[in-house]
Image (cartoon, rainbow, N blue to C red):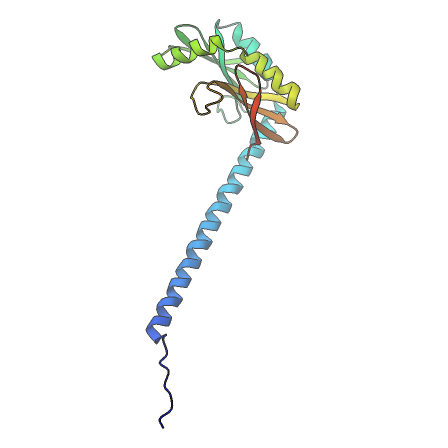
Length: 203
C-alpha cells in the first residue's frame, strides 16, 4: 500500500504572497496609528498653548466687550479670543457687533486693552435673518456669559450666537468656550431657556 499523500495547501508562492499582505497590513496600521498620534499630539499642544495665552490675558472678555461697545452700537453677536494674532503677542479679543444693516468687527489687545483694528461691512441676507432671530431670543449674550460662569466657574473666553438648526430641540443657541483651571470647556446653551444642553472638554 502506498503511503497517504496530503498535498500542502500553502505552496511557496502562496506563503510569500500571504507574508507580503500581512506586512503591508501591519505597515498601513502603523502608519495610521502614527498619523493619529501625531494629530492628537498637535491638538493637545495647540490646546495647551491656547490655555497658557488665555490665562496670561490681562483683559477679560467682558472688559473687551465694554471697550468695543464704546465704538459700535448694536447687538453683540460673537466675542472670540485669538491667541495667534500677529498684531498682538498676547492674543486679541475679536468682538462682532451687528446693527440692523451693518457688522462691526473690533479687535482688542488681550494684554493692554488697546483697540488694534476696527472694520465695518454691510450685512448679507443670512446675517440679517440671524440678527432678527437673535433679537427675539429670551437670553441675551451677556446673560449667557454670566450664566455659564456662574454654573461652571472659570471665565468665558469665547461666545457666539448660532442659528444653524443643528439641534431640533435647540434651534438657536450660544456656543461658548470657558477657561477653567488648565482646561477649556466647550458649552452649548439654549438661547431661549438658558439651559446648557451640551458640555465637553476641548481636546
